[in-house]
Length: 85
Image (cartoon, rainbow, N blue to C red):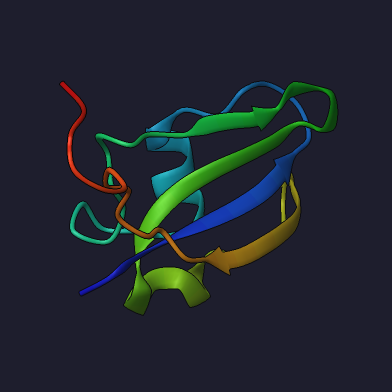
């Protein structure tokens, strides 16, 4: 299944992947633990995670999560054109 990016703002300390997994009730299969929790904008306390499409609805505001944005596509990035020598 496709993975989607979900962004959210956090009040307080920087969340760990375990914090986020617990907060949103995500299983190991629903969240990409290798991607982790990426801080996108430190001034806005904005973070991003990568989840399975079927789990995107679990990522909702509440508690120390002020707002949620997404889902955003996560297209595969590949080179454009033939490799240059």
